[in-house]
Image (tube, rainbow, N blue to C red; front, top):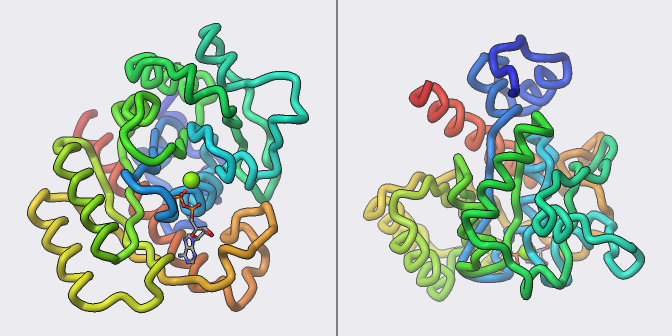
Length: 276
Ligand SMILES: Nc1ncnc2c1ncn2[C@@H]1O[C@H](COP(=O)(O)OP(=O)(O)O)[C@@H](O)[C@H]1O
Ligand SMILES: [Mg+2]
């Protein structure tokens, strides 16, 4: 069992300070046992970019549950074609605890995905039980990135999660998809994060519509992430927030994802406080 009451380690204190948070027992517990999923009914909304930043910022193990090419594993530098094993499939099939690949100082540790996961999806219950078991064994928080839409794997990850981060661009279609999602997932701990990856300068109308969705379904709105022109062309594998110093053109983005990470920790810490 993970000792949630043991004092914060140097590393945990550094992680929390980076988020602008003083170490408390509840926040430290989040770093040891929090489960976060990044999900959305639409693709291309910014899940993977945000997932890799949040995973690094929280010092979480990133579990890539998206089987499509162009996901977090590839971005991390992992290439399944050159590997003999498939850690995620093996873990689900054989009920094993995967050993995360070490990200080093600039990337989160990773359990990489595999294209065959789509056809070999475990049930939602299996996925949530697995994630809970893995994080207890790792004694770390877990951050799962997912395939767009409601998939078995995605539902499993969401059920195990303390917070589900839902990035959303501010356009009609995207907000339509967001509304369908929050309607379906009533009772799930969602956190909506406006991400302007498609709309450089969204109109007030779109912000108003987003505000109404958040209010109607009582879903908290997280800090927004603005359009970052350099992001789609960035080839570096490290998390943007991990660069030292953060280049001027990425500073705003790095600050914004850090604020999202801080919001996530605070939401989970509050939940854990209420449970305990
Ligand atoms: N805030 C942002 N500003 C600019 N581009 C972004 C932003 N967030 C994401 N992107 C870009 O949008 C595209 C889709 O993002 P991605 O994270 O892969 O979405 P998803 O995982 O939801 O499919 C990528 O090219 C990504 O670099
Ligand atoms: Mg993705």
